[in-house]
Length: 247
Image 1 (cartoon, rainbow, N blue to C red):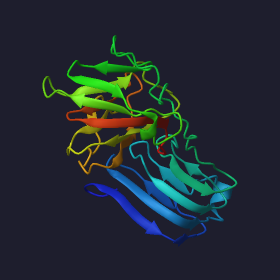
Image 2 (cartoon, rainbow, N blue to C red):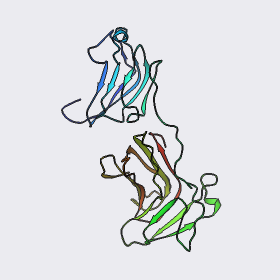
Image 3 (cartoon, rainbow, N blue to C red):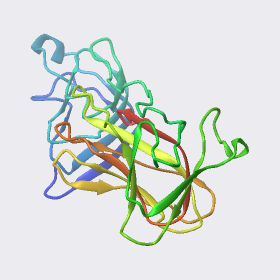
């Protein structure tokens, strides 16, 4: 932990193996501090008898990424806040959840133009027209492409799940959608962060090509909220939400 933000410090291919240390070989703390230890070997022959961890990640830090080999003892951390920690070890295992898509009806089936309804999703606003494109436009099997014709009034048009997925055992959520647009900033993803504030992803570049618009962050378990904010014409397909850091 430094005097300021110490995020995304990187260490590659190191060997850290003193027989023992007073607290741990690696100690990470601070809300603005995280590290990447990649292909690192950690050993501590004297730590086993004292039952001391080789790695401590304080709950104030999150999103750390650590891979490699860990011997003799264990990791002390909330691995749901650090799903990128995955050492080869007989004493600890990582907890990155399986990337199972939890958006119901991610294939955008069942669009009803008369009632402006899509099973599994709420369409917030009347300032856009929706159409399902032909099957020839599909990028993925059995996943329709919908066209959103934005009507340029009333602020962003929103698409969000009718029932936000929640799993209190997980801290990180990753979600996004494939989008095609010729207008820069036409769509972004947004969510309620664990603090209660709304945060957003980068928006579409306006390239005219398909781009995956998504984000990954700690989410508010007491009041989960995920949505796509649309401010210009865009085609959409295959929305995805998983817990952990893999889409």
